[in-house]
Image (cartoon, rainbow, N blue to C red):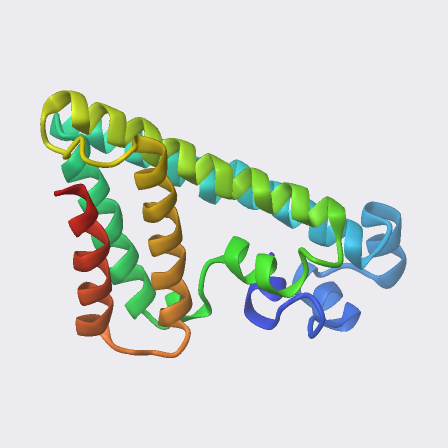
Length: 181
């Protein structure tokens, strides 16, 4: 996954992948079948680890803080911190894959859609809770807010790829969160 994340699907060579995994060419093919099968496995792995951690963190922080809005704000603050770091400037793995490969690979597109939906659903749950708590305005449909937050979070990660600096990323997050008012 790290090789695909750093280089993209098309630029990641079989040699890059074999070297990163410490496998022989025959072991690679015996285990994964090919580059595309490995790529699909990385999307599944990302969803099972990074994405599950994100959605779980959003829910857990809301419970721990007693505030769904604070949890959403914290997710954006963590995204800014991460995006401003050198490793964070690679962008979001799912977002990168969506741009590069989803139009030409139906299996990848399905996994990317599922991942984006999981993010949207986690935000939706938090928005509903925040509206019930009176912390998030009821002026907007909760699903529309969740979609906006998902798009804004992904946009922030795309912007990080062009290294705008932490101040610019904070501005993006602050304005994205203003939809909750």
